[in-house]
Amino acid sequence: MTATTLLQSDFHDRAQWETSPLDLDAYLVRIDYRGSLAPTLEALRDLQRAHLEAVPFENLEIATGGEIRLDLESLQDKLVRRRRGGYCHEQNTLFGTVLDRLGFVVEGRSARILMGDAADKVTPLGHTILNVTVAGGQWLVDVGVGNVGPREPISLEEGIEARHGRWEYRLERSPLGYWLLRHRRHDGWFNLYQFSDEPYYRADFEEQNYLVSHHPASPFVRRIVAQHNGAEMRLALTDLELKVFRPGEAPELHRIDADALPQVLRERFGLVLAPEQETALLRRAKSLAEMSSEGEQLGT
Image (cartoon, rainbow, N blue to C red; front, side, top):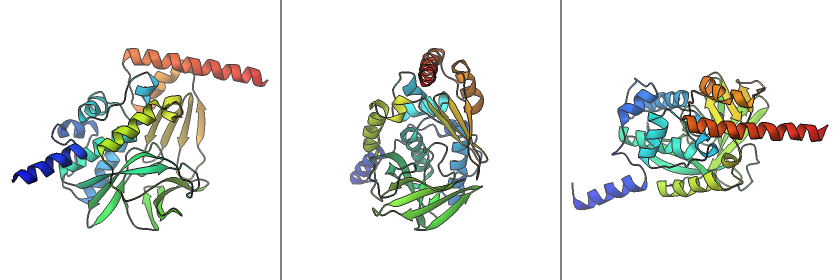
């Protein structure tokens, strides 16, 4: 290997993925994956499904006064060893690193979240996604968009519709010229996000991560969030409300008592917090319950 090749390899590792410190065996145990590790489309599908089954989407580190860090050691400690979840910057950075180690050609991308907004609306960049080249084509891969995201890779082809079990997705071109990902809900097609083909790197994700985890207007600063992207049922916890989604049906809404929140997180999302974090979360949940009660009294 020449000096130039070594420098190029080192730049790629620093700029995109930190593959060398990855404990691949521990990650595979975390997601309970025993399938093929060959860089094939079938393995990519299986890995994505396994990751989504095992690792929930959540912001509880922020909600309890902690920090979100994207270096690989922090990601492995939180998502693998402590069996926690995370949001897009954490989950897709870890998953991209795993795919890179396995020999997939994987690049980062950044998307503009819409979540129902019109496709001609310019929203800020801020959602980390992955572009994987495999089986002679390029594929959108995303394990970090909560309970509404795709469970399998989606081929980057305009107008393609993909069925992941009973969940349906469509990839189009938006009026702004971006790729537009849409999800079919019980009430029709729902715009998730739009993105370009421009590569993004860990440095970009670090900046976006800092903003979304500190800005007072960020939903991850303002809310308690936990979600799960299941094969047959999907869950979305926001503060003290839990929504249950099934394909083609309107969501069920359940209100949660503040004291029951840690139990809901354990039983429905597999999330167990450290004692000091649970105490901080309960304090915040009880404050939310008090504000809600006061609002109801003022409204009567």
